[in-house]
Image 1 (cartoon, rainbow, N blue to C red):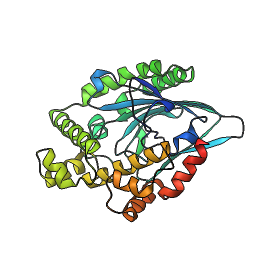
Image 2: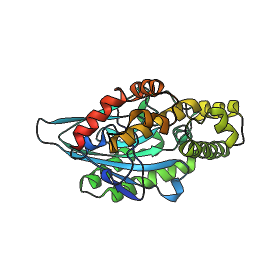
Image 3: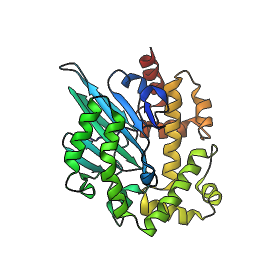
Image 4: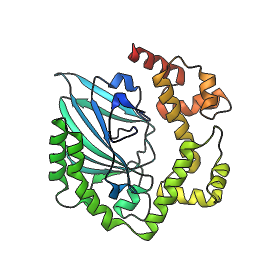
Length: 290
């Protein structure tokens, strides 16, 4: 199973404390695993969005499958099989089934960070998973130490354990070209997050002082999806987040609030990304909230 869990971060944050963009039905997950989010070292701020640390301890014979609507980024993850690098997922919904007891220590890269950190000449094949060789020969041992810290309830220590490997890899990987691309992408993604409902790629490009074609080329070369795809995914993430917090929201009003001109278009995009229609998603979230 793929290993991607997402959210948003202040310094260290638990699942109950803030936005859960991408986590499907977060209320259902709260008693199944513990998620902490940790800000990166300043030396990694251009490449790393945040670190996430997950631990779980389920009763014998009990399993739990968590679904995530992925963000358009790669990850590096310390897990029991080793330290792995994950490109942007290929599937619309990513799932991980948990059983027994365990932990993982993940690093969510910034848009374009997967290509930059791994020193690739393209964004990477969607769905690709392999050893995080860029972190060096001690990565698996260091990852195991980080997981042990996580399972002792010390997510900050877990992140501090893997940070030197990431800093060394980042220092070796940075180039003037990647630095410029990551800065441009950071500005573009910030603009997408702040965009008013109904923002088009042309309007986004104009706000960034570039052309739609140049923006599309930047995304194709470093992210692997189009600006239009990212705008759409952001709207779905936001809609799912709002429904997860208040399942009683009017769906037509929600569609308009996140940038859709008609509810049918919103329903189609939501269904393709999340796997269920907004109304069904709201019902499952309501049941989880009790």
